[in-house]
Amino acid sequence: MRTILESIESEFHRYKRLGDKAVAQVAAEALTRKPAGEGNSVATLVWHVSGNLRSRFTDFLTTDGEKPWRDRDSEFVARAVTPAEVLAKWEEGWAVVTATLAGLRDEDLARAVTIRSESLSVLDALHRSLGHTSYHVGQIVFLSRLLCGNDWQWLSIPPGQSEAFNRKMKGQ
Image (cartoon, rainbow, N blue to C red; front, side, top):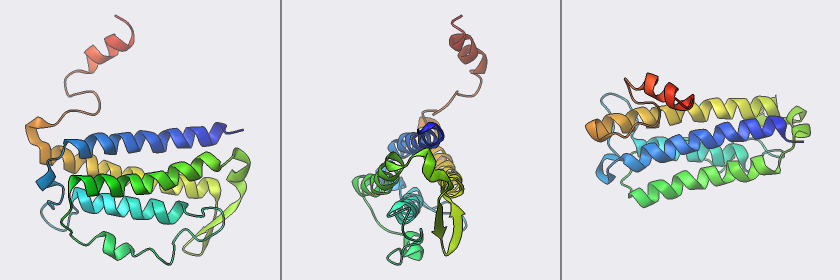
């Protein structure tokens, strides 16, 4: 049975779609633009999310989620990249989590996994990862919106259109 896992998978996929739609709107030259202060660019956030997902979900049930091959600090280094490279890096991380989740069953949720030597249930590890991922996808969406300015295409109900949306959902 996969009732709980289907719900978690659905949420991961929802956040991936939000990220997909946000990143697709950003002009090539803006993908590496950092906001004022110590902020990260869209490309940096993509590198971090991808690195985290690859590390956490490679051999998920059998090895520590912080892999020895992961160089987390390098994920935050500014880099010149093309939109194709950003998309490839994004997809690389999501492919690992998608494949791993597809192979899990609800019975696995009580099993123990480790992240940085800390023991967690599979359910707790999935919730932690979902929270971490959604946090950074939110940053990607917000930054993408700022970079696009007036050209931004809303990913949810546009401001001032809630009533019309609700009427449409009710079939009115």
